[in-house]
Image 1 (tube, rainbow, N blue to C red):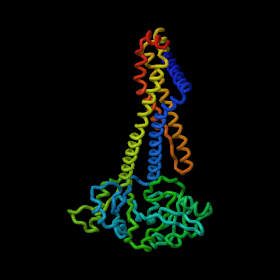
Image 2: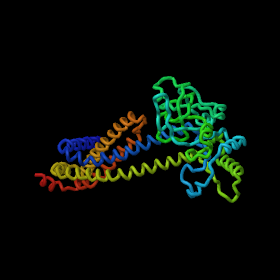
Image 3: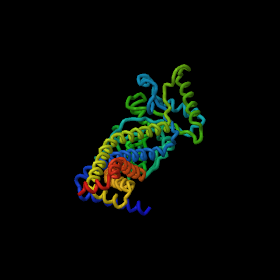
Image 4: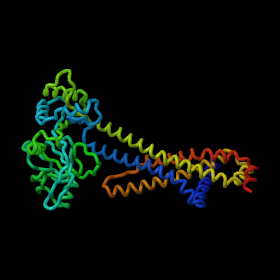
Length: 419
C-alpha cells in the first residue's frame, strides 16, 4: 500500500511538472476537459436548481390537487382542433359541483388564468404582474402565508369587492417598505384596496396557480363583472383539493360523471373537459428535467471528447520526454505494472485538475447569478462528485494507451533512445 501511495505522489509531481514546464501546451490541452465539465455541471446545476425551486413552490399544494378546465396541462391524445371546440368551465358549474358535496372533496375554488397587468400607486407602477383571479377558498387550497394583512373573505369574493392581496415584490416596488394595508392601487383602470401582502418566497420562473412574489390576488367575480364570462383572455378553472387518503381515481370519476350529467354529454361521447392532476404536472416537469439533462450531456460530450484527446496528447508527449527515465526505472527493477499505474495516475490527476477548474467556474457563476437574479443556484455535492468522477474517468480512458506504450518499452532501447 505504501508503494502505491508513493507512486501516486510521484505521479502528482509529474503532473504538476507538466503544468510548470509546458504551461501553454498543457493548459490548452486541459481546456477541453474544463469546458466539458463546466458545460455539463452548469446544465445540471441550473436544471437541478430550477427543479428544486419548482418542487418547493408546488409543496404548498397537495400533489393530488385537481384542475378542472377545458385544456390539458400536458400532452393529449385528443386533436387540438377538437379541444378548441370544448366549452369552457363556467362559474355555474363550479357552484353546481360545490353544492353536490362530492365525497372526497375537501375544498374547491374558481379561478381565472388571465394575462399579466400593470398595477399603479400614485406615480409608481409595476408591470407584468401575474393576476390571480380566484374565489376565497383559494387561501385554504394554496395554504398561503402572509407578511401583512389577510386574504379576502367569502362575502368580499361573492360581492366582487375591489380588494387585492399583493405579492411581496409588488408591494415593495409600489410602497418602498411603507405599510400598504388600506392603500388604494389601480388595476384594470379601477381602484382596489390593498388588504394583504404575501410572504416572500423567491421566484421560480414557473407559476402554477399563483402564490409567487410577483402576483396579485383578487376576487374572480370582479373579473366576471368587468368582462363577463366569455372572454378569450380568461381561462376559467375549477381547482379541487381532495381529502387526504381518498382514492384519487374514484374522485376523478365522480367529478367527471357529475359534470357529464350537468352538460348532457352522451354516453358514447368523450369528455369535453380535462381533469388535470398536479402529480401529472410534476411528472411532466420531471420528464422535462430529464430531457434538459440529456441535452446537456450530449452537448458537453463533444467538449469532453476533445478534452480526452488533449489529455492523451499530453501523455504521449510525456512518455516520449521521459523515455530515458522509464528505461532507468525498468533497469532498476520497476515492473510494467508500476510504469503503467504511474502514467495512468498522472493522466487522471491532470484531467481532475482541468475538471476542478470547471467546477470552480460553475461555483463562481452560480454565486454571481444568485445575487443578481434573486434565484438560488446551488452547486450540489452530488453534482460536484459527478464532475470530479467524470473528469477522473476521462483521464483514465485518455491515459490507457500512453500508459501501455510506456510500460512496454524495452529498458535498453529506452535508455539508448534518451542518450
